[in-house]
Length: 267
Image (cartoon, rainbow, N blue to C red; front, side):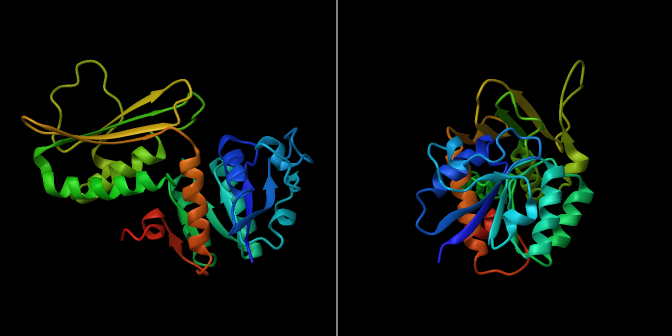
């Protein structure tokens, strides 16, 4: 029996990509498609936005969409994701969360939800990015404090949070490997006479423009050499494939908070 998947934000960039890939999946099928109550797409076939009719109609009723579903995949906004998580808790539906920009309180509540229904939560579902996170950990441990760490990321003009959740996760991984607290050592912008660089800081630079899907580089700058670890996404399909892989991973799990490192067996 195929895994029954509900897509939140079904007419968005990620939603359309997920529906298109699901249409050809031998293991999973689209069970429900959600949009906000004011969306002009309500009542239309979800496949219209992803290349062809699929027989699943877009709705705003969370409870109706989740009835009989196995997993919800959510790449929306924090407020919407929190409402979706509470509905999944009521229905016993598992979650794959790719939304970023949560507050600490929201993250805490999602962890509570995961105590009762299984969840994969990651700021980036790309398999390549999650392999890169492992390489960042290895690089930071090997290079140590003698190398300055800078993180540069670029995204399309429509992205609303900065730095990206992926960049922040890269910073967290590097900081942890170096025995630092990112909240205390992160520098998110430089302007004017800033003085010499504090060797213990981790810097972030953000670029927004055009239709850039997502570029991330972690720079370890030492004396006489630089090490650059880079990932460039040219299609949202890489994130969608990772999210569907995460959903399949949850099929054998009933509760707990997981991330893509778990999904890929990189622990």
